[in-house]
Image 1 (cartoon, one colour):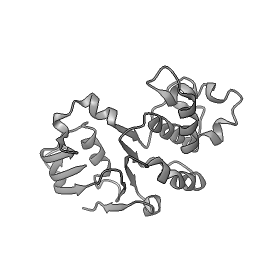
Image 2 (cartoon, rainbow, N blue to C red):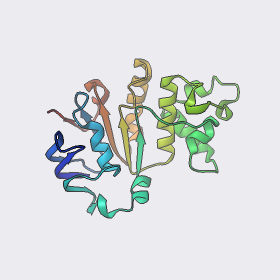
Image 3 (tube, rainbow, N blue to C red):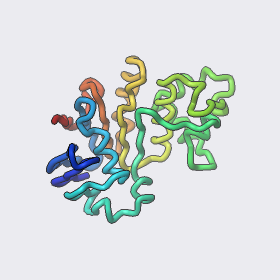
Image 4 (cartoon, rainbow, N blue to C red):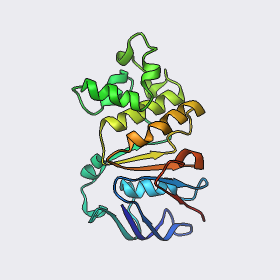
Amino acid sequence: IVFKNINFSYNQESPIFKNLNLSIKSKTLVGIVGQTGCGKTTLVKLLIRLYDCNSGKLKIGSEDVKNINSSSLRKKIGLVSQEPYLFDDTIKNNIIYPDKIVDTDKLDYCSSLSQSNEFIENFPYLYETIIGERGQKLSGGQKQRLAIARALYRDPDILIFDEATSSIDNETEYLIQSSLKEISKNRTTIVIAHRLSTVRNADNIYVLKD
């Protein structure tokens, strides 16, 4: 992934990026840290084309993202955001969405890797448990782990954690960090965080400032 001479602003008065250059090697684990408002999440929005940069080039491989069909682009990318959207449905259907037919081995593997199995096993109906609108029957940490399981189930080429562990307790965050090596195997993984400790095992760490 290459950001080359990227300029971007939501409005003309306050530019977010001026001639930003950033390169992320294929199949590496990269951390991006910085204070609130420095542009960490904006990087993600440009990558998944919620916005296009004002000028400069953003490439995945040799292709400019502007030349990639939005649907095809988003199939390559798994995003776990700070506030994931969950459906009033079963745990199983939330993880395998948008698939209709479940791969049981894959489901178990993704649940284990995301540390979701730890709480799923405590529910009497296990994967068939209904979690309520926006996952209201789950804690913040449980919702995040379920969102990670969903992203892993899609098996994307690029996996992005955007402050994904912010509402998880320290013990669970440590377990997920321990799983990151396996989670990021054979894919490009971007972890956006406030705390340096969250990305301490990354291959490279980029700091955004001013």
